Each structure stands twice: as C-alpha cells, then as structure tokens.
Amino acid sequence: MFRGRPRCYAASVTAADTPAPAADGVIDLLGLLAYGSLTAFFRMSEDAALAESIDDKAALAGLAVAEFGHFQLARAQIERSAADPATAMQPFMAAIDAFHARTVPADWLEGLVKAYVGGGVAADFYGEVAGFLDPETKALVTEVLADTGHAEFVIARVRTAIEADPRVAGRLALWARRLVGEALGQAQRVAAERAPLARLLTGGSASLGDIGRMFAALTDAHARRMAALGLEP
Image (cartoon, rainbow, N blue to C red; front, side, top):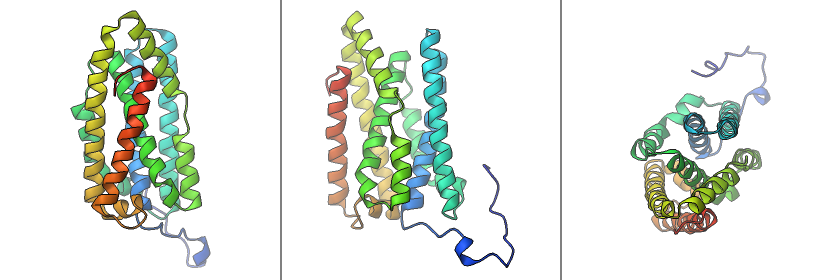
C-alpha cells in the first residue's frame, strides 16, 4: 500500500542487520500516530480550500504538508521496527474515522477549532505516554508533535472573529466541548480495545484507574487550551 512488503534478504545477511521487533504497545502507538497524522493532512487540506483569503489558504496548505511529513516519519519508524505500516494503522481507522464522521464542521471557524482541539488532545495524549517510550520512539514522537505554527494560526483567527462578533464565542465554545467529548470517547475506546497500547499508556499496569487518571489530565489540559482561544471550557 505504501512501499510494498519487506524484501526477502539473502541468507548471508546477519541478524544484526534485521530490524528488531518493537516493544509491547509501541507499534500500536506508532500506527495510531501515523493514521492520525494522515487524516489530519486530509482535513487541513479541506480547511485550506474553505479559507477565504489567499494567505490563509497558503498557511493551511503548508500546515497540511507538515502533517503529511509527520505521517511519513511515523510510517518509516514502523518499517524500521519490522512491521507493516498498513497493518499497524488498521486497528485505529474505525475510531479516528468515527470521530471525523461525527464532528463535521459547519463552517471555516468550526473547522479551525476542530483541528486545534483534535491536535491538542493528541499532543497531550502522546505527551502522557512519552516517559514510557524508548529513546528512539520518544524522539520521533517529540518531532511529530512539535508545533508547526498551527496553534498560533488558529488562536489568532478565532480571537479576531470573536472581536468582530462576540456572539461567535458561545457557539464555538459549545462546539469545542462536543469535540473534546468525542475525542476522549474514541480515545477511551481505543485504550479499551488495545491491551498492549493500554499497558504502554499506563507504564505497564493497564488498570482502569490509571487510564481514568490519564484522561482526567487530558481534560484539564483542554480547559487551558480553550482559555488561550478566548473560549469558556
């Protein structure tokens, strides 16, 4: 699908040349990151088409390209870990696609807030687990989650819209609450269905209490993010 199946190496290749299998849950995490980045690329491309000004179209197109670059990084890491990228992403397609199907923005501003909320929850989610990752995977996740300027772009546009029409704030705040509820609901679904990923997220315990505390931390971080937008959490 992406780069074909791994090639069959000659018998003379040593074991040291063969990629080592990744630790329990890491392939799940990389598959989730890869498919999330790929869908973010598509969504930002659509948002770019909806933008009214050439400058906004160009800015969002650039951010979409950055998301595709993140997808390529995650895909390459999966391949280096002796796994198939399509197989690694497949378990997470239903949850991510369901989130997008249930949260179709009505206009340009809702599209911006959706990308901001979804990207923020994802960044917090991966930030929670980063301490349990091996150095190579942690470095990749850090690179993928590095701010490409999207947050600053959204904050500026949303605040400008609120200043022009304060009534916009109430509508966007309700929209953001719906988004974070859907995002956390799908994330909990994934954690419940993928035991290796759940163990990775909680440092090996995979207990419901530990998972619940992690999602409570994500909710708190979302509230701070809404304040930056000028919206009530």
